[in-house]
Image 1 (spheres, rainbow, N blue to C red):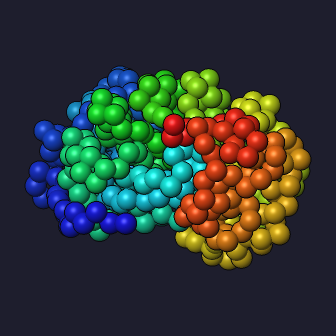
Image 2: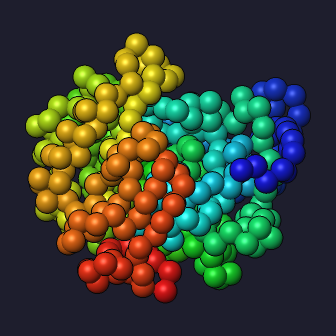
Length: 362
């Protein structure tokens, strides 16, 4: 659902091409260190980009200007939209409510299958739409539309960290909820600082081999595993999404290892969403995920002992809904992103009284 802000195109630069950036309206980065000869090193994610004067980070959103690191997209989102919280997906957080979503240009991954590549794989200068929206105004939109939760999604929040942080800190003072959907690559220190103002996180665990991460995302698995552990240690609500791509990350043995790792390291009550892949961006030569493959992954996860396993991007499928792990009755009936029936009452199964993990209305 669009909120009707209209066009908001602007010019990042103070003058003609190749002239200096206008730093007066730019936000200095929060996590970086100054090295010799004007070089700065970003510390927001595992890449640790070391940048000389004028150079940009791998995510395209950070630039060294006279020995200081600035974020180019602070207060400059390219996507603002009202969505159902189920679209995130966040299935165990206030079902049936709406979220106000923000996205910008840029990402620190290079996923060949990215469905939002028009945002994530471009610099801000190539965006069709850019809005001037300082944190205070972002909060005002949520309050005007009576939306209880703000979400940072579409592209990687790590790449617009300072904007996420400034909104989240202000939002918590106003009684709003904060959710973000991430690839899990944020460094521990900035992650823990942001989690102080965060209610829940959805993490893409894109596969469970370094080979897959390297070949399809130019990234690493280990930082994502570290992030997942840190989120649980900070006692924030966590849900995991695994986009199942035929021939690339759908090996049953790898899926089993992933599920056992989740159970042992994170807990058996962390929801795991197996999402159906459709050809996109640079992976148009692979067919959509067969429903049988999703159902097989679902069985593997349940057999491994995970309590809450769902199938996404398959509207109408039985396992798009949530079932009580105790009495096995359907407690949240969904069709795609729509909640048709919610039988979680005060955090418990209405039928047997079993405590359902999550963030629920009381």
